[in-house]
Every structure is written in C-alpha cells, then in structure tokens.
Image (cartoon, helix red, strand yellow):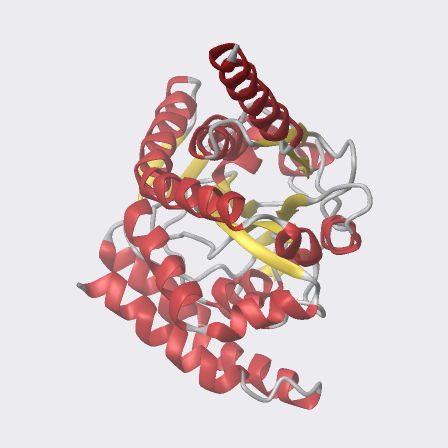
Length: 348
C-alpha cells in the first residue's frame, strides 16, 4: 500500500511539473514590415527565432507576423513601444530620427568595413561598449535583442560612370539625407520621388540618371533594366542597421531563464550574420549580372575618391550642430567614439 501511495505521489508531482512547464510557455508576437523570404527575414525566422525556441527548450515561441500585417515600418517603434499589437519587432532607426537621434550617425560614414563579419563586429562593439545607444532605446520603452544588417548601397546608372567625384549634369534619387548631401557635394542633383516602379520609368525616360540605394531595393523594382551600370562594394555599407527590439515592460516581465535563452540565441545568431551577408551579396550580384546588368566592384582608390567627394566630415559637423540645438549634447563626443571603433574594424 505504501509503495502504491509513493508511486501515485511521484506520478502526481511529474504531472504537475509537466502542466507547469506547458503553462509557462511564453509567446512573443513579432511584427515586421517586409514579407518573409529575403536575406534578413529568413535570418530572423530561420536562425534567430529557431535558436530562441531551441535554447529555451520550447518555453519561448515567437508568433511572427510579416509584410506589415501588424505595423508599417514607420510605425514600428510606436507599435512595439506600446506593446499592445506586438511584443517584439524590427525598428529601423532612420524612420524615427527624433526618437533615435544618435542612431542616425551610422549612415554618416560613406564607406565602412570590407566584410559582413567586420561590420557585425563594429555594431556589436558599439552596442556593448557605448551605453548611450541602449539608453536611447530605453527612453522609448525598448530593449534591443539583436541587430541585423542589410545589403550595401550601390550606384545604379543609366550610362557608364567614369568617376564618383564629378556628377555634374546628372540627376539622382536616394532616400537618406546623408546620401542626398553626398551626391550634391559630388556635383549631382538630387530629386525626391516615391519609392515604387515609377522610379524605373523615370530612369528609362531620362528624368533620372541614377540611384544610390541598397542593392536589393534596386533589384526589387528591377532598376537594372533601366540603369544597368551598377557600381558596388561591401564597403558601401550604408550603416543601415535593423534593430530587433522588445517592449521593455515585456522584457522585464520575462523569467531569468527566458532572458538567458534569448541572449544565448542572439549570441549564436551573431556569429552567422556576417558570413550570410557576404555570401548573399555575391549571389545577388552574380544573379543580376547573369540577367544583363553590368556589375563593377569599386576599387579601394575609387572608394577613397567617393569618400573625399562626399565631404562627409563637413556634413557630420553640420549634423552635430543641429543635434546640439535640439538638446542632444553628447552627439559630437559619441560620434568621435564611433569613428574610432569604425576605424579599428576597417584597418585592423
């Protein structure tokens, strides 16, 4: 009788343990403005989210919503900040410059490290060692779980380009205010146009002579059909970072075990970002070449020519002065620190 009682007691404990573990499952709702299937979204879903589930032994699961189902790119910060529609999501700092002013400085560097691994190492170093960036996110009720990188920029031109420091007589479209200034400093005219297939029509008609845009965005609208001369380099990195953030209150409410599992998943994901970016860039460039594009990889000398023509340090000084007027008094100091880290990765 005692043996039976002990066995029943043991089975009861085991059953309760199973129920507790099952009920402890954490489901995080994720929002992304892009459809699943490109380099970044596949890395997020197939590498990072899969690693979270593995590291947590199934206790943490991400419910992913793609293609702006829960939020647009421009509203993503507010959506995750509020935490009602989504717990986690991709925030693009460029779309919220008032809320994330310090993050705007990354795009101010016209050239960066020559590999995805070095670019990832740069951002990891900055986010680990410069608390001001995480503090800026915390002010917006956000915690960054992981960052992801996009394709580098490329010059799409309707005719062969002989030099990047003499763009007189040409008209360009680019999104970033940094890149707009750089093209103008190099002699080009910049116009603002909505990003859609009408861009390709403008290239065909001669209204536009070229684009400065990340390679995959140009490919999305088949810009190479009208501007087949493409100059690119891993070093035209754009400094474009995608922050995979979580609502701070939601993060604080997670158990220590769940937080540790997510951190381990982020660490393992981080090691794969750089190589994935490099291989994806080569594959996309090869595919575009096979479909008729004229691909030219910029030499170190050509990259230096572009950097000098951009007069980026002059534009950085203007930006720092503007930030100080709005109360962001540490912008100059932090920019110098970021410059030092970037140079370490570029020239080591």
